Image 1 (tube, helix red, strand yellow):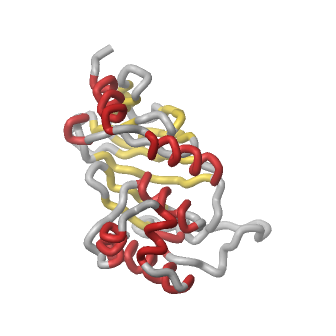
Image 2 (cartoon, helix red, strand yellow; image 1 turned 90 degrees about the vertical axis):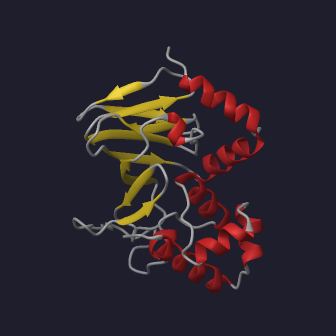
Image 3 (spheres, one colour; image 1 turned 180 degrees about the horizontal axis):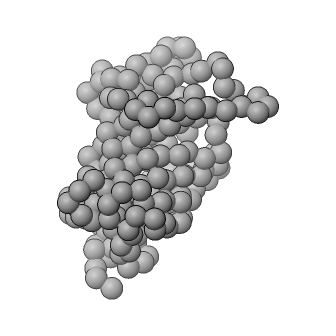
Length: 220
């Protein structure tokens, strides 16, 4: 499993290979030195949007933060391929999701495939809606999933259902039944889109975030 310790090892290796100090990574990514220090010590994992923020700040593919640099699968190689066996995907645990990241040996991909298992069952438990760059397609593999967004009424998805959303829109995927709830998501983002989304996110005030989350909690 991709525990915080694995993320910390990858971050430390990347930082040392460039001769950066923690304060240099903090300046590039916008994350605090204390947060980065906890990540490197294996005491803290990061949410998906923070992983994107860190990857953008360091100008690396997000997969580098899971498994470190790989020399066998670089961008520009013709006919490249990657196989991930059952039980092999890198895993990132957050409060709301268990993220499985397959094929992390491929760098600079135009999209990121994720198998996610939902943990939270209510918006109060989930917390603020998440937003990040690009768009995402999500297909339900198991259970029932309730999708909350800031501009639309909540949508209930069953196995075989799918949804495509603008990831810059605040959103949350909640478990809608007592058993396991899993989805396959494919997230697309360009470097420019990431930068723009992060800039907008940094400009949003706490009051604006609270208002968006409250709006999503309403029953339409």
